[in-house]
Image: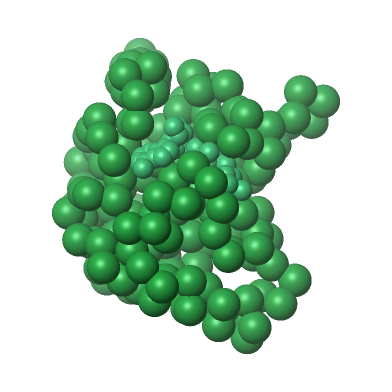
Length: 176
Ligand code: AR6
């Protein structure tokens, strides 16, 4: 499993699956979630609505992941995960790590071999970016062997140079 950093908009990346930093409601929002629904068109929302009706009437628990079509996007699938809202009083990093683990598991389950992640929880949800990217890289690099065999490439997407540096530093930290 190769891990790379790429600066840009996740909606224009040609990979099998892109991950959406969604919320438990699964019906869209701001940030990367808004961008994915805008660019991917109504088919994504329709599937999210069905998932809410049939599988998660109370909403997707934070730290879990579900897969839909990617609609009009270059990717084949969108894997939606709901990250934790950052809290200074409570350590929610296990939930953030779980978002990456569960998304990779979903990717393996549907047969995706390449996957792109945004920095989950590091935007609207307020997680300090260096910490969010460190947790993410640890979770990705420590994914179980069966997942590492199935997934060829993980792209860590940065929407700004600040996040790009944080991803690169997190990868360096993981090697020291
Ligand atoms: N491509 C790649 N990364 C992006 C893009 C994009 N098009 N747009 C934003 N980012 P956020 P969260 C980066 O806020 O913190 C939504 O309302 C962004 O710069 O999208 O998990 C949901 O519905 C940041 O680095 O997600 C939820 O309610 C990272 O993606 C809530 O926000 C994550 O920022 C989730 O908040």
